[in-house]
Amino acid sequence: MKWQERRRSLESFLQTLTGKKCILSNISYDASIKKLQKIIRNDANIFCQVLAIRSVTWVATELGAEFSKFSVSLLPDLLEKMKEKKQILRKPLIRCTLEVGKTLPLEDGIPVILSALSMANPEIKKQTMLFVVQQLEAMQMERLKGFIPSLLPVLVELTKNATQDVREVAVHALESIYWKIGRSIGSIIYSGEELHAARFSRSNCIRVDLEDQFIRPNLLVGLLKILETHAADTTSLNLYECSDVLVRDDTEKNGAREERRLAAAILNESADFAAIVNCLIKLLDALKLSPTKDGDNFHLEISDNQTFRKFNLMLPVAAFEIKIFTEDD
Image (cartoon, rainbow, N blue to C red; front, side, top):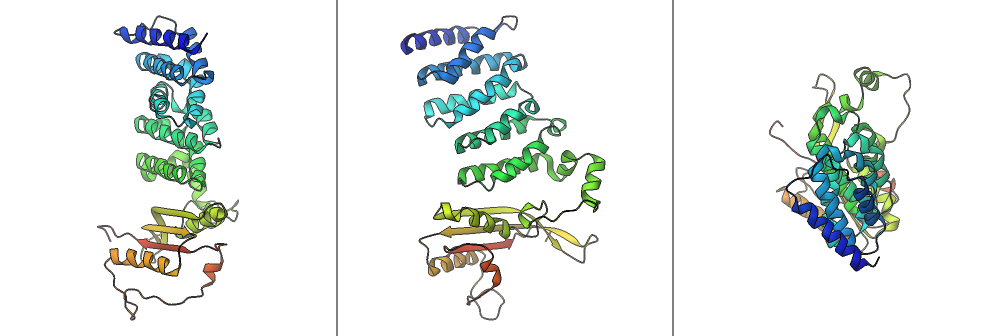
């Protein structure tokens, strides 16, 4: 069948669907969904794909939870199609993925989501994470326990991805999880006894590097490690992070307190020393600090600290980490 004939058949099918006021749940759509899925997966014509996607979207929206029997097999094809850049396909595809996702318990789709996040294509990773964020907004807290523990390590790893868009969306997804769960995230990842053991057991302790620690004393080390990892693959990279760190405080009962900080590390092959200095001066100007020699604010001087040699960075780098004061400070 030529693509023009397939297109006319799909247009007629979609018109039949949308012409009804509602879908009758006692009608079997198995054969139709199977054919539509085959078109989405294999058809070379973009217009036929769009019509098939729109048809699936409509059926999924109308059937709701009854559509879930198709969702597990459909979701991998929809996420894999996210690599397409044409907006005529991208927009209906995103909407279809969200509608199909609503019919599927997210914990049942974990293998599909993790598989999509492991694909090489950065757009598939990005759109899959955005799909997860959308699903999280509607998810009840009790359902998170079967979902978050397997997803968190993957998202953390994607914050180190070489593609900036992927890193930004991974951070956005982690922020969404944090705002959804809050400080009770430990109780989601562990049971009560496991959480106690994770906090206090010392019998099976192993040494970990700073970037592997869940609780960090600073942000800048992690950003510089990312720069070091990807410096050979890029000539320009801007990294930013705003998060909590744990600092020593003898005035507190537990000897430590949380502190919100902002950190950035900026690498640019074309930058010279003047450009790096200008970047830092602009930051301090924004904080309403003026250069001084008495140490009250800031001043520029030559430094030969060993820390600068710990990272294999041969290009100009500007980096800073500052505390963000809140109303309670």
